[in-house]
Length: 437
Image 1 (cartoon, rainbow, N blue to C red):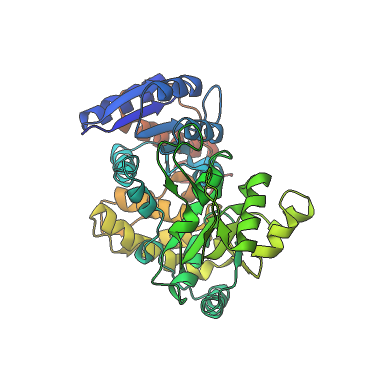
Image 2: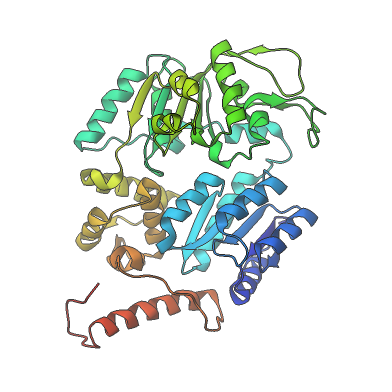
């Protein structure tokens, strides 16, 4: 096993323990105690994966992602964060992180995340074709689940109406609401379904690389262009191009995109000839693009060009009837991924899932269910398998300062703190059924 992993965490004990644990599993690791030191290490050595704590002494996870991607755009990044940082974790994924792992850290979970990230990364730097295929989404990977709420039924009808057309579509909704799933469903029901569905996250594209990723480049056109590159527009020829978080494109790249949509032609960086394209565009944003256009933060002419039809996705907390439908879907996916046979949820667990506010929407729900499947010793997921921030919304994780001897201790200390917190709130009355938030 030749994969190299860089661990960036200001807590030396955790960093060293992760290093030792992953080295025992056959990986080569290096440790950095700050973002700056991590970037210096990444410039000296090529790493397949970075495990980066969100709260670093010199920068946060969002800045770290951007800087690591500037050093090596193909590097995979997993952010380590607390459940109290769920909104930030979602932002990290939109900025280019492949996944986030929540504290307390469990050995099996961190290993599973690392293996998954490195499996997806296999061969991506060696062959452009392989990298291109990673952007072409398979139907089974982005399955469109129809809920039973009124909003879900309405969305199903909208997909059926839009699919046969060639209209450009803008999908708006909070992060994690399933915008790519809706876009893929439109593609799969369209006449273009046998052609590629290519998804690209504009939020993860450094400004200077966006044009190359979208339109391609020819060898020698700029420093680092050692081979010809096919852009995503060409990859999606005859099919659908999905531009997620389109609002993150720079003003300059918005102008280039508008030209392509108007002329239906692209020109690779460094080339002198145009290439005709036949691509349907679906864009998505977690912000109101029309409002951004009014403020001058998004080109108004581009907005009107792509907005032939607007689709708004309602957040999960406003369609509670669908929560258990998605939870059971994610349960089956987790069983397949983890080779488990968990059958369902207890009544108490279902009640907690239904009433949680789900700031991270479907993405948060999926991660919570997968983690619960991993931690459930029985066939039914009890509430104890859910994170404390789900079962006790008032809980706030505190910084860990005691010496840590192994990864299991991290989980034990977090659990002990939660118990102590409840005891303090109930004045150590163990028979008390209610406590102050």
